[in-house]
Amino acid sequence: MTKLFTSDGASGAAMTELSCETAVLIGRAMATVLRNRAGRKVKILIGRDTRLSGEILSLSLAAGCCSAGADVGLLGVIPTPAVSYLAEKYSADAGVMITATHNTYEFNGIKIFNSRGLYVSLEALAEIERLVTSASNEMIPAGGEDIGRITQEKNAEWDYVRKLIKCVDGGLERMRIAVDCANGAACSTAEKFFRGIGAAEVKLINNEPDGLNINRGCGISDLEPLKKCIIENRCHAGVALDGDGGRCVILDEKGSVIDGDRITALLAYSMKAEQKLAANTCVVSQTANLGFFRWAKDNGIVVATAHGFGGRHITERMLAGDYSLGGSPSGHLVLLDCLKVSDGQLAAAKIFEISARTGRRMSELASIYEPYPQIVLNLPLRPEYSGRWQDVPAVSEMIEFCRRKLEGDGRVFVRESSTSPTLRIIAEGRDRETAWQYAQAIAKTVRDNVGLDEE
Image 1 (tube, one colour):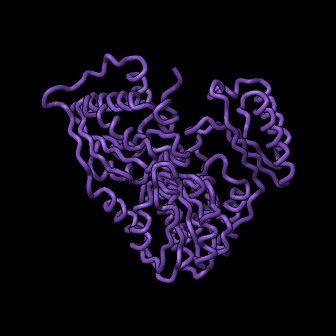
Image 2 (tube, helix red, strand yellow):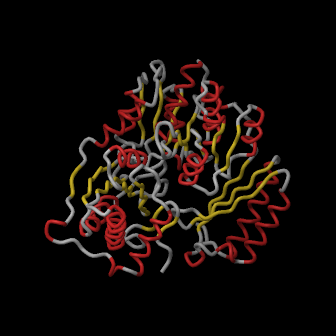
Image 3 (tube, one colour):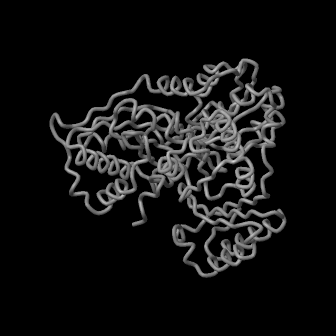
């Protein structure tokens, strides 16, 4: 059997790879692990995004939890950072988000947070996986009055929105902003939040989810709709979210992209000036642009690099060093004084706030540093090579060759997505053409040896 959990949780094609039966077993195993550790009945919160499979998987998970004696609070459609925050606020033993983040509706996943709103430990995930895959006899069903109860947490959305509003000073009374909700989890919260912090106008697009259109031609997956909205409505800025509301990309008044690295730089510079940047340090992903590192050094900002990819590793590195800011090129932004995981809406609001306070246009702010040219390619893997592509000599040798050639003037990263069978190739260098050639060389080797034919 393939590995059930990655560091980000369980994921796969909904109903086939990630089935209702699997969700029931995960719920039962999770409740069992929590109950054994707490020595009492436990409570688990469950939220979801808008994809078609979300409701049935959340109810399957809830059924599994209740069958093992845990009470369940259903949060409904709500962003991932809300589940993290509410797990702690509601004194729950865990919070679970049903989402495949930026992927299309065909996929889904399960993310688990502990009672403090942090990603559940890898040890706990391993124990849950053991129970599901090889020790189901240890998951003793509850009976009689010990069966868990399901309740609806009716105040969840507003409790989360109020928390976000408290984290922002405001001052957006003259700003027109556009928000692409990706037909996802932030469709309901975005208008409440951005109006709540005083934005003069909020233009929402892709905020009519039908279960099938999440991340499809919208949000961070396709920035053209947001660019068009900004220009047509003469907005000061816009933000594109992903399907679970955890990540963002900002566009300036001209529709130009401000990616996660530049957002991190802007936040770090502002927080340092206000003496709010703990230890004058920000945490970044290993894939942060080389231009960012040079800028940080020139501005007296220390950069700590996360030990892995994804939001979990950024937060863990921040907690280990007691740092207050973390970010990644893909738009994970963690403001630890406010929330413990990345929140796209909050990060965007903080940047809009900087623009309003300084009176500078977003395009001016975006010029904070000059990034190195970067090529990013996403290639689908053949299923049998998921988790094993690096063991193919032709692939590993080509990657190592390109790394040696770029050393000193650039670098190469190749990694598998944690939420879909996709290989990401990132090549970066002083010269764009050179980086492109090495990225293409790796891509050709991947296609020839471990990749699917692309349509």
